[in-house]
Image (cartoon, rainbow, N blue to C red; front, side, top):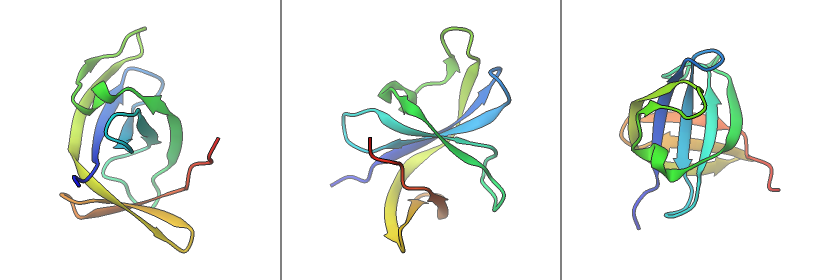
Length: 107
């Protein structure tokens, strides 16, 4: 089985500049989306769960409809997800970077 993909998009021109970390959860479903204050993340980085994003953002760069700014890809690759002591750890396999994310509430 192939590892799921991720992309990090630098989002400018909409509210304050930030980064969107998008995670592929299934081969054909929407992407889980996290707003990240800076990239690469540091110990003080803030993460906020966003609404799911369309899969096209795995490969998209450019203007966002509705005058919501512009996105530019800054990182892409595959990831692994680990669970440890009720914590969710995302490991970006090609960057050897681990990110601790809250477990999203199931709705």
